[in-house]
Length: 266
Image (spheres, rainbow, N blue to C red):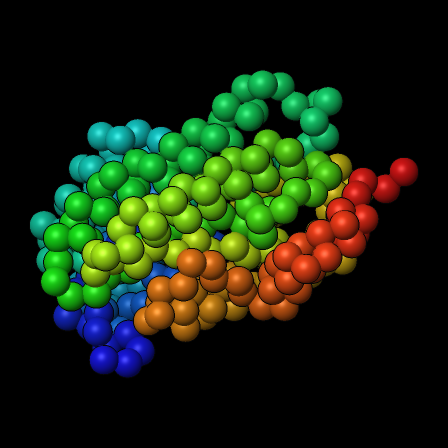
């Protein structure tokens, strides 16, 4: 079956779906699946997101959960399956960047970034993988990293390290589950114009923001569209726009050039 039709009789569950990229993914998937489960930490934001999605797909469940809590994640995932039926697609968009120069970052910042991104992803995968691999039909599991999960950049040592770990997890599990009906992908976008991006800009060094804006900032709808188009094939990496593909290619074929391009200004 081509396109998303192979998932049309099953639900999609999206973590971090109350705003930004996660909400855009939910909107894009809603017309093509049997139901949408949206999960996020904020009840207030979930209520608004549910109201936005209701006209697109009447079968929706919004439930709060913190991805850093295994019990929360399992409870929310099980609630979505119990209400919506089997899930063919699971997407994790939960996370938040903490930029800053290495000398200015406490160790607790690194711990928080790894807890949010690596441990959060592990918790989602622990809940989702038994469900997705237990089906005979194809299933898809996507988690969000960043282009900074593929190479580094000044001002993002804690964030990039945690996202590198997410990429390592996904590539390892693709090998481990290669013979299953599930395909795992990692979404590696550039900067995205979301409420989270606006929040992190309040503490971001000026040189870091200037470099990001020069590299290009995508709208969440464009990132969601790239993800939706990639789902049928289930590639290892989903690279939205030239803003992600170009640095990926430079890093692959001319890494020293990328090092110069991403070096901190003197």
